[in-house]
Image 1 (cartoon, rainbow, N blue to C red):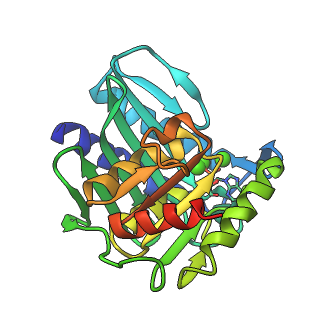
Image 2: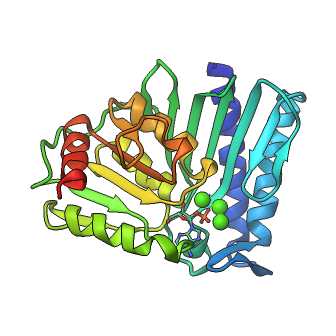
Length: 256
Ligand code: 2AM
Ligand code: CA
Ligand code: CA
Ligand code: CA
């Protein structure tokens, strides 16, 4: 799996260099659905990542946000070329490349790379998580009183806004503060690095969370859906946090 990590990092760095070079030359901004934008740069970056990986692993399969599913293999690479496209388009320097490699449905390798800050978060299942080559752990914050949480608003799903606001109303008064920075992959990486104590969001896709969720778990954190079910991929919600904050978040959410 170490070889897969090397390739994932190479692909993320190549895409990162490309995106930074192109960031003053965004040619087209399209709306895929309401509020979900994509640019020519997202699409080209995804192709760079796929080409880099295919060069080493010609028979592997891909699931990319912009190009969908390709190939059929026990190995599948899950790619978000720019997580935080709205920030990227508006020149807010907070977005990342997210690449995960799954074998037989299980995430084995995860990379989240922020090329603006040159911050690289990596994990291999069973081998821990690293930030720029140094081992990271989730925070030790106990409970919610001093916890800094992050979230994303349900911009795509106005029908779940009431459900979202209800949970916000339970968590926000209990915690120290809540961030909404616009990149779920970086939110998860920051939980893994202990910069944030917890994260929760509705309506994310596999490419947003696959790499980041492995980072959190390998850094000693917990990941589940809003009901505490570890198979968060089967639901429309995700919670990730250090184990103590995780427990406190679920308790706060489930209180009447
Ligand atoms: P994306 O930039 O790859 O689309 C944060 O809420 C998550 O939702 C991000 O991972 C982001 O991924 C996605 N997202 C899509 N459209 C968004 C929008 N208009 N505002 C905020 N996040 C958006
Ligand atoms: Ca998108
Ligand atoms: Ca995304
Ligand atoms: Ca994206």
